[in-house]
Image (tube, rainbow, N blue to C red; front, top):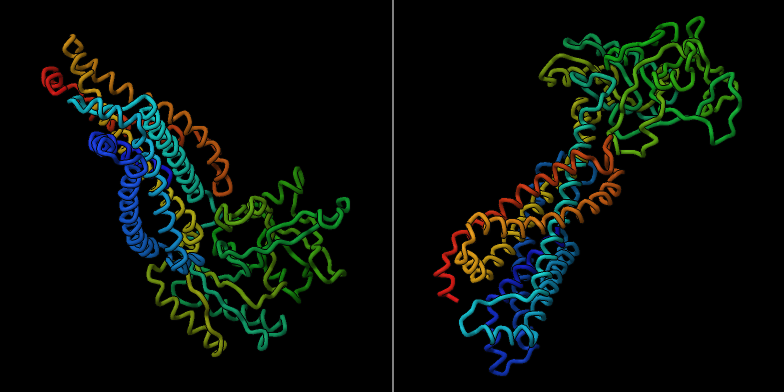
Length: 537
C-alpha cells in the first residue's frame, strides 16, 4: 500500500511541477540555481508529507478503535494492541521519509537545465509538454501501481476463498445447541482419581435432571479450545518401531454420552458403556478411534477388537487398549491454527472414568434459546455438590468456533480493505496520467480532428494508450501474485498459491476500474474543438 501511494504521489508531483514549468523557468532565468528550485519543490512536498503524516496518525487512532470494536474480545492478545509512542514515532517517520523521497525525484528531474530550457522555449504560448523520458517514467509508475494492486487483489481473493473453505469445512459433529462449562478441580482437595471420577459422575447425574437438558458429557479437551494432546501408540501385532518414529494420535478423554451430545454417530462397533467402567466384571481398557485411524492402520480389516499399546503410559504392565468403536473424523481446531501435520492426525477417544482428569469441559446439549436459566441451574448444581467449586468460562460451541476463525476473518477483512484501497489508488493514478496526457496532446488531437479524424478514433487512441499500461502492469502483477500466494500458503486452507478464480477476479476487477478511469479522459479528448485548440496554441 505504501509503495502504491508513493507511486501515486510521485506522479501527482510530476504533474504539478510540469504545470509550473514556466514559473520555474522564469525563476531560473532570473538567476535561481537548480538547487534553489529543487529545494523549493522539496520543501513543498515535505510540507504535504507532514500534513499527510498527521492526518494518518489521527486516522490510525480512529481505525484502531474501530477494529478493536469489531474484534471478538476473546481473540488472543489482540485486545492488548495499542498505538504507543515507539509505534507512533516509527509510522510518522516512515510517512515523512516516504513523502520526502517521493518529492526529491520529481524536484530534481524538473529542475534540470534541459527541462528549464524547454519550458523557456515554450513560454511563447504553447502548452507545457513532457519529454519522452519523463513520460516513460510516469507510465512506469502507473504500471507499478497496477502490478501492486494485482498482487493485493489476488492475495485478498486467496484469503477470502480460504476463509470460505475454512468456515464451511465439515466439522464431523453438530455444534448448534451445545453449551460449554469449564470446571477445574483443585488438586489439594481432589488428589485421588476416585475423588475426581466421583465428582464428575455425580455432576453429570445432576445436570441430566435439569429441565431443557437433552444430554451432558465431559471432555478433557473441547473442540476449538486451543489445546491439543497427542500420544504415541503401537498397534499390537505389528513390527516394533524405533522410539520417536511411532505414529501419534490426537487424544480426547470423554464420558460415555459425549458422542450423543456432539451428535456423532457410531459408525462401527459401540460407544462407551457400563461394561467399560472401572471395577466392572470383564472391564478392559477401551478406546474408540475415528474412521481415518481405522482406514490407515486396519485397511481391509475389522478394527473392532484390535489392540493398541499406549506408549505414553507409565505403567509398563498395563494391558493394551481394545478398540470398541469407530466414529466420524472431527475437526477440532481452525485450519492454520497449528501446523499442517496436526490436521492429519488420527484421533482416539479414551473413557474419562478410566483416565480421570482434574480439568474438564462440561458439554450440555439443549434446545433452549435463552441459556440464562440453564447457566443458573448449572451453578446451583455445582454448588450443591461442592460449595467451594467455581465454574470457569461459559461459552457456546458456536462461539468457540467463531473465535477460532476470528483471526483469519480479521486478516481477510484488512487485506480486502487494502486491496480495495489499492484498486482505488491505481485507478486514480491512471486517471491522472491519462488526463495529463490529454491536456498535453490537445494541439495534436486538434490537428488530427482538423485533418478528418473521427471522434471514435480519438477515443480509441487515448483508451488504447491507457489499456496498454494496464496490460503491462497486469502481466508483471501476475508474477508477483504467484510469489505472494506462495508466501501466504501457511495462512491458506484448501486453496492453491495461484487459484484461478482469485486471479481472474482480481484481473477483471482491475480492468473494469481501469476502463472507467481511462474512459473519462478519452471522452474528454473527443470533445476537443480543433479551432479552439489551435487558436490556444
